[in-house]
Length: 481
Ligand code: AMP
Ligand code: MG
Image (cartoon, rainbow, N blue to C red; front, side, top):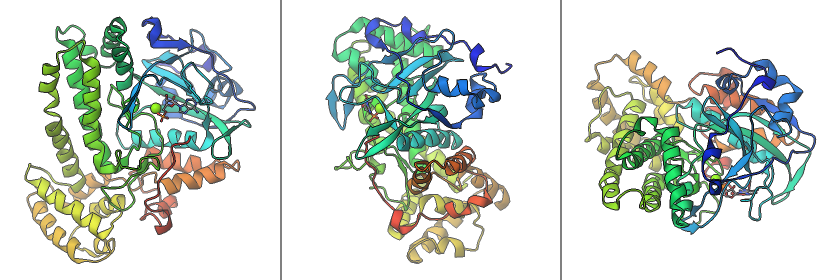
């Protein structure tokens, strides 16, 4: 389709067809003195928006909630959720305002002011957290993992208080679905069963339309969500991503990565790593993520119980572990360049993870270095504190490689497309944020370019391709954003 100028774009609002309890109509509260920080040309194309529009003043006004496009109606969505295992009866979009839908993508301004669901919050997002969300959603996409996306980010002169005064900002983010496990929990726990059913039908039409005519569609719906969640967890584990706040209100029924907060990529491999400073008990530690995925699905099961027999859902969820393992096995086989994998390879992987943890090897760098491996072990041995465990594991790996039919060159090429050279580690984001807070957005641009193609060499950014510098390793981030 041809691209269009911003002011000719028309939006629809399918979510507003749901019962009134599902949302609250609210207008964005624009920020003072807004300016564009970055816009995403690729996402603009997904909305049929011409690239020239991204440079216009109208675009900034649009991002700031000041310019309403034709058909746009604004509202926030109501949901609940289990936060750190405890049920919170009402959450909702406390700072995200939906402004309409185009090409089945629902646009949201995050940080656009207070809503009915703001509780004690100010409805704002600080520059730091907006940059993190903007860049990381692009990075996830670049890594081939399903995620919400973002069209752009604006800054402003307006200040908001967190641990200190910080500048407020807005990200325009978009998703094929903003429905969370917690959205179902809200209507189920408040016994609004009419809304619960309407929401289920809506969510099926939105994310799983092939199920619409099935008699058992609610059960299949749950099955799909389970499958998508198992896959997403395997993808996070394979790439070394720690989400940090896997509350049920941050779990997408479409299986996307949503709500980027105090997330992190692993530095040295450490299954016990906890990126979220608030998470004292490590509920959302890296190694726990797959299990929490299941815990969250069980919370969703409780919410869906009025629509589906629990017995039937039990017969579905009992396959979660196996599904997760199957995805993980496949992804690890890809990362290691193995033509074929079988269940017995889990032992080999376990040995590898044990070795990486013991030798404190940078997770991303390990797989990238391994992607160049032939028979010379020098580069790999240099990655660890000492040599023996790596040598032992490589002996085993060599035997696995001997089973391959593909040539070494073919394997290396494949691995270089599977194992990123760059992931956006927190210290890199912090470098970009520190100068952005002084008005220099050049590193936001650099990280954005890396995020879009993390497998490319990007010689000019080689300094970010190594192990995380010691002083920045294994840090935790605060939730305040
Ligand atoms: P999160 O941990 O970012 O997923 O947010 C959890 C809940 O708190 C959601 O309902 C958010 O909308 C809400 N929230 C977070 N920050 C703010 C804020 N600054 N103002 C209002 N609500 C907020
Ligand atoms: Mg959230």
